[in-house]
Image 1 (tube, one colour):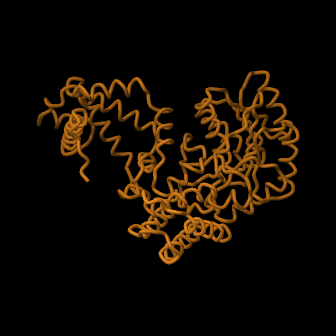
Image 2: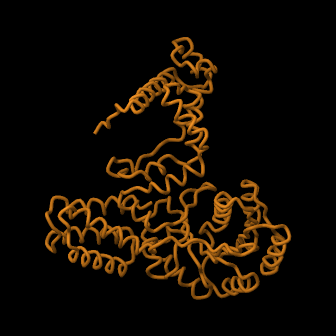
Image 3: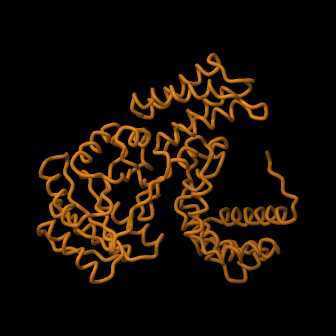
Length: 435
């Protein structure tokens, strides 16, 4: 997401490197490139114009201290303005109800039913409380079955009454949730191919019947600027509290994310990051601005690691690394922990300077990790603990056992030895970066 825009913005900002001060003359080309980058990312023209005017005005009016480089000052100005454009600050969910009711609305094909599942999964993980999914889309064929399948996959209960009146289903579901001590109720409502009066009347009736704390519009980021019209159309009829932008991991330029808040005043609260049930993130404008400008997002990375990685296992592995006793069994255990974090390319992008190192567009084939796992699992416990005993005949047996080549077994063993040497250097304080 935003890779192309981020790269263009970063290249434009590089132009100021080496200048002693910021002047109208030396930033004119840079501002033109920033303007083109935003327009090509499908950011609304009015938004682009206001953004570039503000950045230029602030940059020319900024007194650069002798201790600071003009480039650093300019980057801060651009980041601050991007943060403001994206909404300024993170807008948390209102979850004060007992149970807290979240109503998800949107057009057909926006990923609404999937978003219901993802959001319930996130809330359960984050707050350790019980969500209930409610099937109120009684029109789309197989919508109820889809939600039930998602519920089964996540082990989250689904309340449904077939194709009855959605308003009555919603009311009954809230009563059921209260009686059974559910903490959250997430209502999957019906969508249409376009906004129409019947759709809006039904959604308004559900809203009046259950008084939800949150009304979240799920919208496909690949719609581009048409998304603004959809948001305004829904917001004119329903008091939207936020937007969930889906498919930001797809082939999208991301401009709608930079236009939504400014043009509609409806905050983006979540973004879809993959098709998996954990592929949803809280939307934080400041962190996102940092990611666009290649500063990474260490806070999100730490949060992700804390939520997915077993701390005791990680500390145990770290001690073994320090003592030089890290073996292939430990390596396999750590690799399984890393796989929980999701696609590795998404993790790499959160690292500061990833774009400068050419890592923004890196693709890591999940098959490679599966191959490593298969090779290690084909070894005996003794071989995993003492990989130095693995000679030619053992390598042949291991390769045959996992259905891979001896060359791939050799490659893993070589990489593991190199990694152990690097760990030893780090623990001894002798490690130096190769650049």
